[in-house]
Amino acid sequence: MGHNYQIVIEYDGTNFVGWQYQKNGLSIQEVLEKKLKKVLKDKIRIIGAGRTDAGVHALEQSANFFINKKIENKKVFLNSINYFLSKHLISIIDIKKKKLNFHSRYSAKERIYEYRITNRYSSLALNKNRTWLIKKKLNIDLLKMGAKILQGNHNFSTFRASSCTATSPIKKMNKVKIIKKGKDITIQFQSKSFLQNQVRSMVGCLKYLSCKDWNLKKFKKVFKSKNRKLCAPPAPACGLYLAKIKY
Image (cartoon, rainbow, N blue to C red; front, side):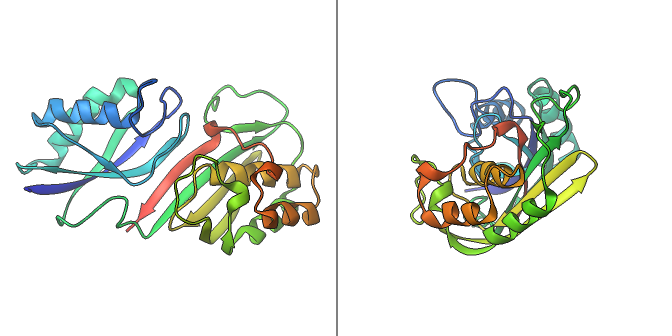
């Protein structure tokens, strides 16, 4: 089996079909495997910790791969691989040698996603494709109340994509945190695992609540209904970031 390495990856997902291989375009996994093969002179298959959708970014995505030979110099490896990745807006920010039984997906204890919103009237110049611009004034108190309702053990069927393959819609949301800095709002979600489209669907409903399109009673009713059809339109992919995987 040789050696098992974990890589920590940062990327801008704007021009990708998502993390996972797809026939309809370029994925982050495909780019990483091609460039790793180039640097390590070996066929590499990487296992990702989370499958981000098209347009979704990562601050610290995690993946692992097996290779027969040992990577002797971490700095040389990072320098070489990032040279080839730079034009794709992908960067490997760390590499760690792991035990053979380490699995980036199944060994994960918690995943942290962040959703970034800019709440202002003017269009975006610097953060285009990297945050959700909401022109309508958001009520932060309502946003915090909604976030609190989502915490704990719940059936999250309302926020689940029809194509989701998870065995159960019941998840434990460890924490939902609202961070506001000027016009920028970050909603941080912490859980062991998430359903497909869950975060963006929750953010879509939180937006309806904080824009006062819904009141708190309606927000709770939609959440408890377990009915996907009642869910608000999901927030766009551009504001979503896989922030960290904890092991």
